Length: 301
Image 1 (cartoon, helix red, strand yellow):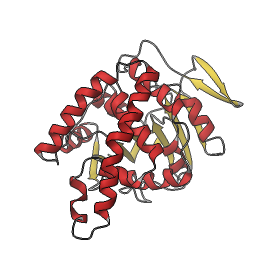
Image 2 (cartoon, one colour; image 1 turned 45 degrees about the vertical axis):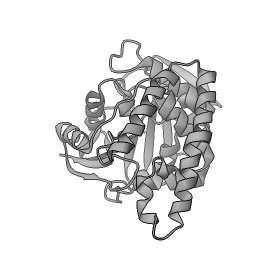
Image 3 (cartoon, rainbow, N blue to C red; image 1 turned 90 degrees about the vertical axis):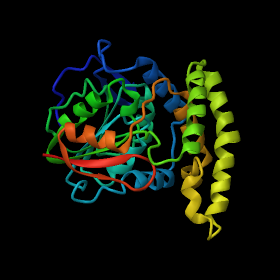
Image 4 (tube, rainbow, N blue to C red; image 1 turned 30 degrees about the vertical axis):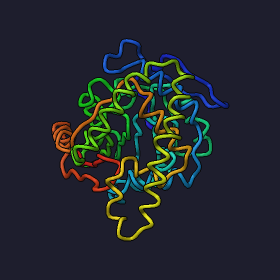
């Protein structure tokens, strides 16, 4: 394991594991309300079975080959949440450092308790306690768009990548590859998100469960039917929420809460993400043509 480059502020103990914390309340590029919301979310959705992790992980890592990530790779997961992508990567990497600023580190400790090549640390993107140019592969999936200055956060991640190493990121897309009606539906849903995210936690979770059942699930069922009709299958991507046809209702409930219950959310076009990756010092940038949009990987030169 790499040594920490600073002293922790405190430590947490979860099931006999000691998790060092480097959180600093003076951090500027962090939204503490959002961090607290995610801590509560991952405490509620704290278990994913191996099949779910493998299936969805394959979607995020479809553009990552063995040159980028292999059993010799030292890896950093920025914003690990419950640790599901850390677990996915742990089977392909030499060692994985998993960091998150929220109380989700406790859920991650439970999910990853049998992974011997993983260490969990509580830290924000501003307080990453490892040296620059230390990691062969760094990834951050579905995290940086919840940080006030997404580009600054991306720069912090890329600083930790070795020269010649790789950075994988997933950021919410601005629906730049969608039509007018799809975008209109999103704008309506976003108005509800702003309101729902302000509710007390238990009420927010209940409302999001209703949304999962009465809004997500009908679209998912329609998508599953269309997928099995040969001449309609090509239209599957035009159906809102069609991505969720492949996942369990547990994941749908989790993502409904993630999407509708999060206070801070930003969205970016493919061009904006590409420009940020270049400005952060990456080349050979490759975007996946598949959902979830957009996820991309680049090489540090």
